[in-house]
Length: 219
Image 1: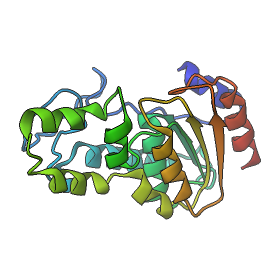
Image 2 (image 1 turned 90 degrees about the vertical axis):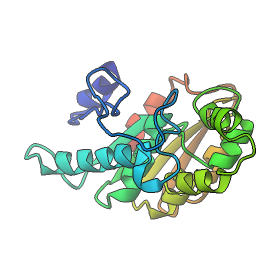
Image 3 (image 1 turned 30 degrees about the vertical axis):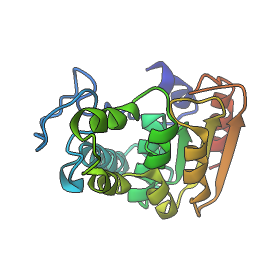
């Protein structure tokens, strides 16, 4: 709730979305053909139609549609915002719904998967590394895995965004490597701004809240 207060004080209506299966109040009832694993990165990873993030992305699209349907909201001023996984979902929502006006994406996850898996030293990208180490040591399914992930890569979604975009990156980030975030940002064709925080890792740059408030105020 605290994260939403700064926007409510601005007079903005706020809808916070719990990601399916990641909170006790938001179960994921989907059954995945290749079973379950630690985390969410590899659920259904052998087929884009059954991959975990397909449903998550659609949840975000539906959330935008729901907000636009409310009489108390301005359908032309919809903004989506999030950090890390939420940053990726903000990009996805902005790419998949043309009615989004502003995208605020902090240290986004789900960018340039191959590079992220190669460079990340902690966090959920390691689940893909673990998948190969435990289940496919000869990488027989590597092309299939990365083929699935390509549908959900923010680098591929970014060119579809029509909204104005504000992104952030911490140059010491070991969870979402900076180069993967730059890769997604560089593919955005819409008006865009990037805030770079050299001394920070995966977030923590509290002054960026002021940047986001100013960005929203500009419309």
